[in-house]
Structure formats: structure tokens, C-alpha cells
Image (tube, rainbow, N blue to C red):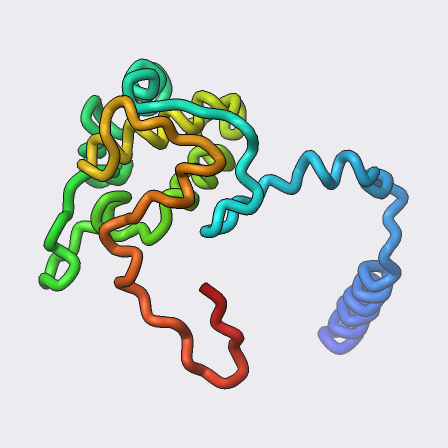
Length: 182
């Protein structure tokens, strides 16, 4: 078979594949129910919208951190260099040539910490912690960074009120086609 015929056959199969892909139906799955969509909608916003009811503090969070987080982030949140990031430290380093971006030095909102733990941690089995454990783990990390006290209760009302050290360290996007909302 000539090179020209082979190229034509390949193009024909590629075009058929693209048309099939554009059809939108593959005969697999089903549309999600409204309840399934609601359960998957776990986004937490900086102002606290989306936080579930629950509570915790650093005293409770220490045991949770030690059993669920310390394997990767070490006992005091210092991380494992080159493997897992530090969660603690870095204060005063953002303006240097080697900034250390941690929860305590870089993150602008405590609610982002809750969202990340809830959505993605523990790394090997994400989204398994109940809200009280997430609030407690977040409180412990905030405590290790000197942001909250050991017995300060974190819940859906108090967590959004936590003033993170770098909250004002970000500049809103000034491009005219972007609506910056804080």
C-alpha cells in the first residue's frame, strides 16, 4: 500500500473518531441526581460560606494530626524536604530570595486550610475526615503557627474570623476583564 493511501486511511479514522467524540453520548453512566451534586459541592469560600457545622480545637487536633498528618508533614508540621511541604514556619521569609510558603506565612485565609484538609487530606485517602476532625486538625496547624490558642474553638463562625498573617499580602487582579472579589 502506498504512503498516500495509508495517510488517507489514517485521516479517515481520525475524522471518524473526532465525529464520535463530538456526539456527546457514549452509552456510559447516568446524569447525577441533585442530591449527588449537593454532596459533591464541598467548596468553602474565604468568607466561610460552605463550612459545615462542627467544631474543634488544637488540643483535640494534636491527636488527629499525629495519627493522620505527621507521617507526611512530621510531628510539628515542618514537612519532609523534597517530599511533603512544611505547614509551619516561614514567618518573615516572603520578601527574601528564598521564601518559605507555609500555612502560617503565606496562606491568606484559615477557611482555605479547612477546605484543603477536607477536600484533599489525608493524601492516601482524601475526604474521609468528619467535620469535627477537620476543624481540630486545622486548629492544631493554626496553633503550631502561633495564630490561635490551644483551646480556641474553631467552627463555622470562628474560623472565618481568624486573621491570617498574610491576609493582606495579595494584590487584587486589576485587569479590566477580571472581576476581583474579596
